[in-house]
Image 1 (cartoon, rainbow, N blue to C red):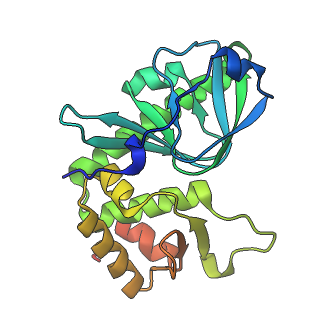
Image 2: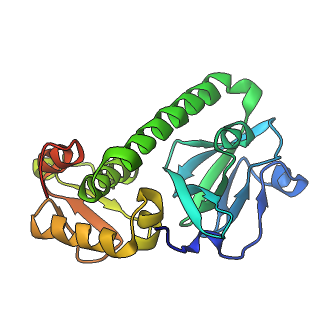
Image 3: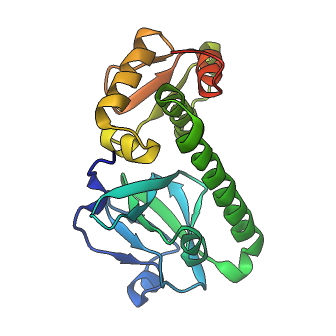
Length: 221
């Protein structure tokens, strides 16, 4: 079951190759829940995420949406990448991006396409074979890798804190679960002391080894 999320919220569409965009500085900021037009956009430019979070998604015939991937700092967005999934993109928080010339960044574009394909394969495996707790654990590890809060000091005993830009409903649409199942899994992980959170948008992984074992199917929640 998929859940309706904020991904379809009405907002102006940002054209990455529009004249207005070309007049912007090399770097720009996009408000939260702003659609980014990828399909049909010029292949001469692409966007690199500097800070923030972007969701790639597809709309189903009945109006529901499925999230295909979550992109964090360093990831690229562009027409060539969108063609792989025939997908749309939207920011989940205030997001800073820079415009790059694709002809001058062919290696980066190629690497981004390979990464996207590998992540698509991993996501297909997640949806097809993993249990609900395994899916949630896998998602948390991925998001921690992309959005871990930077600190000058080493992480204490492997603790990693990151901002969760996705709502519980967004997580459900990404993992092919119901909102209720996602909430139950997060609560169970918290009770088991694998993660900790006082606010829903700020997650700390407190036992990475156990969470990785759960994600790999070696530990039962």
